[in-house]
Image 1 (tube, one colour):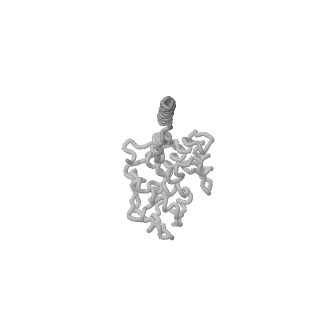
Image 2 (cartoon, one colour):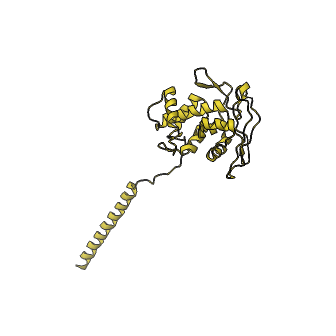
Image 3 (cartoon, rainbow, N blue to C red):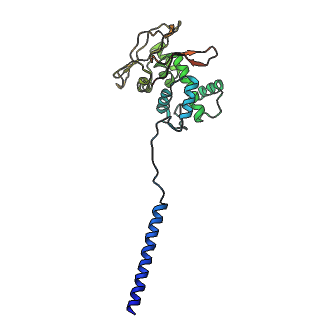
Length: 246
């Protein structure tokens, strides 16, 4: 009798052990894989195609578009500034309406593709008007505010000074230590010297003046590798000799 009970207990133990082992194998096989977390730079993946399209259409280096987008919105499609600037490239409502109409864009200023196209078109226009790195100041503070700086010497906002200091190196603009020079494009009606803006909070040493550029006579911009030429119809093309910054 005891032997029968012993054999039965052994069989039960064996069945339980097999069941537990099988369950463990099944659990191990069905356990979902651990998600891989990756950090993407602005323009890599999600917006890369839109940036490539904008770079090709308006002749602006993708590097510049990426850098401006990262500085303006940190890649937040729905970003809205206190002043009302919208989307990835932080475009003001009136500017958006003008760019949308001229470049055949959609109605939604937060659409990533249209916002990137509009912002890139605006970058191109500011560069053609002011050269490098003045186009960055005009993009950030607005062309009227930048014109005020050029004509009266009224100091640019500290935010704009820091913005230019951060982004100017990508354009090849002159920069020494804390100092970044904001140049302008010379035109026959605009012969005044460059103005110097000082940082009241000591963050920047100042914005140093440059010698007058030769862009008005057909020379390249301070970047040296990104020559821009306006079309009569208001659109823009890159010169054959121009090549994007690396």
